[in-house]
Structures are given as structure tokens and as C-alpha cells.
Image 1 (spheres, one colour):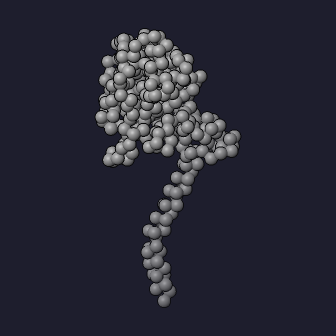
Image 2: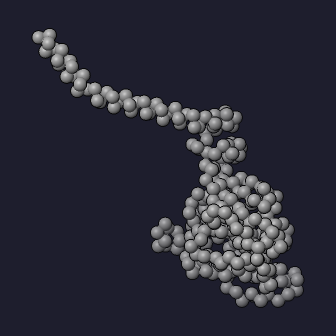
Length: 286
């Protein structure tokens, strides 16, 4: 009888040995994950204590102070030619009626648009002349709060009015963003080309992605200085062959001030047509 009990116990141990080992291994793995997770986010603790807030998991440490002061911070712009690092907040994205709050830093939209205060950057001094442009690296980096970066290269610069009264009731959509239809993109390309202060050897392509950055300017009252950048892979190779645009399309008020005829006065008042869905089936005007 004792022998039978011993055998039964042995069989029971044998039967449950594997599940027990599996459970133990799982517990060990979970403990290890918890420890690693705790270690990987340990750098956040001083900032959470300092600002008394909860941070997004795995936010890059270089954003911690800025995010602690303003939780709307969603990225950073870096201009190689000025060594400037400007924190970008979600409210600087241009609004459009097809988005709630403009384009997001981490989305894959064809065109992103960001507005900055003129005091935040010196890009107008660098990119408002063909000589300045040709001597610059032209590199701009956009980094999200998790440290993921996209590299861009400046390929155009122009001035735009913000009030319709300064251009026969028209405001060129320097703030355009999202996925444009191909026909609308071609019109956008043509108008940027006419307005640009100079022309490098780059040709805009519908398959490329772009970043538009605008700042206030003293060039004329209620104007913006705008640079358009194209996303690039790898190292930026500066364009050194840009030539001055000898027939820049300025808003009407510029021609009035300089007592000149506006050769573009019959140009259509174009508005972007953008896709409102991921499958690119539905569109609407901005």
C-alpha cells in the first residue's frame, strides 16, 4: 500500500512538473521585463518629480525639460546653418478644415506645415538671397519627442501675404499641408516656382515629401517668409548652383509700393485640393 502511494506521488510530480516549470519561467520573464522597463524609464523620475507630471513612455530625455514646461511640445526643429534647436508645439501646425489640428510630426503626409515666431530663428537672413542659400548646408532636421528624426533640405524660399486685401483678395496657401491630388500638387509646384526668390537644380516631385516653415517678416507689413524643404535620405548634398529668379511673383501690394506692373495679375486664385481619407478616395478644398 505504501508502495502504491509512493508511485502515485511520483506520477503526480511528473505530471505537474512541466507546467510548474513553465509557470516559473513565465514569472521570471515577467519579472525581468518589469525590471528592464523600470531601468529604461528611470531617467524620467527626476523630471516627473520636478514638474509633477506623467511623461509619455520612452520620451527622449532631451525633450523632458521642454515637455515638463509645456506638454504641447511634440518635436524639435534643428537648423544646421544656425545651430538653432527650436521646440515645436502642436499649436504651431497650420489648421485646415480637413484636419482638427493640422498635420502631425510623425505622420506620413506629403506636406507638413509649421509656423514659427520670427524671434525664434534666423532663417530669413540665411535663405532670403541666392548668395546666402548657395553658401549654406540647407539641412533641416525634424525630430519627434521619441527621438525619431527626419532630414530635410531647403529647396525654395518666398514671401507671402496673410491678408487678402494685399493681393486682390487672395492669400496664397503657404500653409498648405496634407496629401494633395496630383493635379493640385502640380499647380502648387508651379506657383511656388514663380514665387521663389531663386531656383536650385532640384525639380519638385509628387512622390517626395515636404516640410513648409513660415515666420513673420519685416519685408512688408503682414507678410510671411516661407521656406519649403524636401525630405531626403542620408546625407544632404547642398545645392550651390541656384540662380536668382528674375521674375518673382510677389503679392499685389509689393507692385503697388514699387509702382510696377504686376505681370501675374490675371493668375487664378488657386486653392489646394487634398485627400481626406487614407485610401485617397475623397477630396476637398482647403
